Amino acid sequence: MLDINKIVIPTPYPVGPVNAYLIKNQPLTLIDPGPETADALSSLQEGLSSLGVAVKDIERVVLTHNHSDHSGLAAWLAEQAQARVFIHKLEMRKLTFEYSYYQERYPFFFESGLPDSELKDILDDTDPVAKPVLPEPFIEAVTGGEELHFDGGSLQVLHLPGHTSGHICLYNPVGRELLAGDFMLKHITPNPVMEADYPDFSKRSPALRQFLDSLKKIAEMDVRINLPGHGENIDDNRALAEKSLQHHARRLAAIQNMLEEKSMNAYQVMRLLYPKIKGFQIFLGISEVFAHLDYLLGTGRITREEHKGIGIYYKKA
Ligand SMILES: [Zn+2]
Ligand SMILES: [Zn+2]
Image: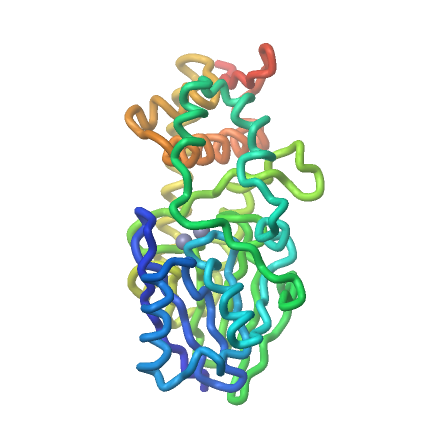
């Protein structure tokens, strides 16, 4: 039996609080400790002490992915508790000093036709939390397929890319709990976030193809309860996975129809879908649109031509 406990941690982001999970079996393990803010730290400390656990007793931290709302406090825990931090290999470079979030995405912004003024709008909308950096000596890289052993059970590490390229979920085959990170959320559809592909950083990773393949795998799994990275538990895992697949199928069809009427670049498609968004939301909008355009292109449903470095998409009648 694994004793899995949820600790709700505040974040300064529109998504709302993040869920950390403490596994109260030996070795004491914390999944996604939350962002590096004073509020998050005090909530985590309170949550742990209400469960009778001291910070220094945490031996293992597992990060579902690099995003700072989940990963920020990992470095602090590594230092305070000498805890090992488990994370997928593809996420590690995103938690180093050298990594610049937008640097490798600039060519994609240019290719999208995004006006300079709106790129500035994205860049000016700075993250309220410092970028997390993991201390290298504490990192344990995983690639999926591993088993994390506990006194009284185990968790399987599942590499399920799509939200990020190195996103992992954890599955307890005995209790049939799925710790899903940002892969599935009850009230919002997670974004297939645009990122450079590994090892060819000049290309985008095929985020939506990965996301849909991972969703199909999750829909096939025997899950009693899905414990997500934000919001309430999901007790109808298969139904939600199928709903999410249908959502993307509808969005793919809608974008394909838009391109039958006229050819457009990614920015123009984004503005038709989201006329009013600003700041970081523009990045998420471009990210969402490219994910769907790349998928439509990859399956031969649309065509692309390039004019002065900007990709123009259309549907042959
Ligand atoms: Zn995320
Ligand atoms: Zn998140």
